[in-house]
Image (cartoon, rainbow, N blue to C red; front, side, top):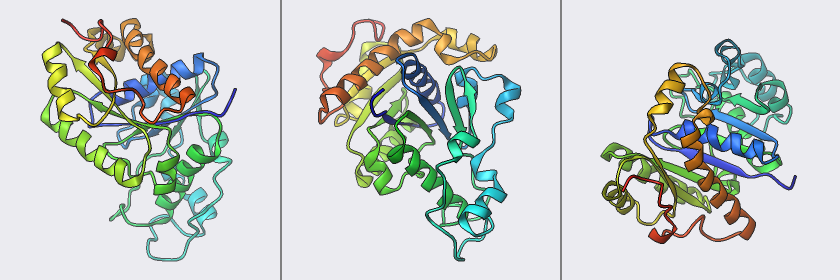
Length: 282
């Protein structure tokens, strides 16, 4: 398999970004890629979306909580911001040591930093940033990053190496505001390709209104509301077991793959004629 692809998925909590990240990971795995799925959201749910057994999911090591590893690799105790520590610790062995295999997909959980002023530089954040940089820049797998409602784990050099940032949007002003904020942050970091996926749309007028809210972002595709997902989620099943959902995510994946092959400057043209007729209800 040729060099992998690096995709970050972001959006307001609850918009369906974790479901989309899990579906994309499955599609890349089925296409023959070696896949690393990274849960970089403090509200970690990617294991469940991938269909991991609850007991196994609970056993996944959260990287940010590996205090001994962080101290050994950075030279400073976690929480000791302001002191001297390595900002370039060894991380290349972490994906092999700390992952859960879910149906052939390597799942990693970054976790949260339980330190007052966690936005500041500290050993934990240094290790997490270096790890994400390693995954994005130095690995040849397909790496799918399920991000929080922001892209804080991405430094500038790492951001510029991301092949695509997918901003997930749902009907609602809070979702639109968050998506605009993410778009502004991404442009400031120099992420070269940003695409939009609109989720939970019910009709064409709703779709048109949401597209108008982010007119500069190329539309990768839309996903309708799927009641089947509620049943699957309640049963602890994998998101990709929802047939209707996968039928709508696959064209999105195909567009991403095609744009990577052609190395186009935009992920997909923001053109209503590219909209597939079954994306939303008439």
